[in-house]
Image (cartoon, rainbow, N blue to C red; front, side, top):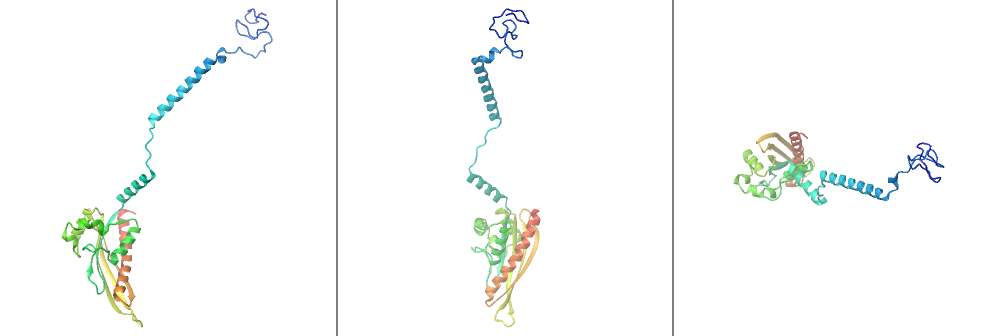
Length: 252
């Protein structure tokens, strides 16, 4: 059988011309000569290996550009975050001497362990507002460095020095006095009053940020208990004013 395109002689069983590859005989017009490479298993294997190699090279290049950072444990991350947050928290020292009815004047920095009534109430409220109060146990070593820190009537200069040595940003110094009034009408209870004056001082430069005052009252059969309640009430008012001044100073 001769090819109609090139004239080559082909056998009757040939579907494609041996000379030009055109369909001959019973082959349909749209058939094309099969590519020898597609039927070669070795060719397919070589192509597959080449593709795998390219994928591996790309993956290695990506890993070098994006190194995996070591993963910290959950506990370590939480502890580090808590430490960082604590270091950023504004620290405040409270130095408020207290004179209750029929009691001695007291101040916890004068070697006493327990906070006075007004300081305890003020401290709790300031801490709830997000500030840190330095307690006596944290200041023990600093206080022992100078006799001036153990005086009931600590001066502004000494309070600023105490704040800087203890790395506090602010110091509150003040005095609180409770007094007894007359009997409540038609009762055996006594009226009790408390007044407190204080200054909020910035430790780094000794500047007085705010002059503060507050008052509280109570009625009780026991004047000492009544005076303590009046001091506590005055401390609540004073704490709100201190927080407002600290927030204003820090831009909150």
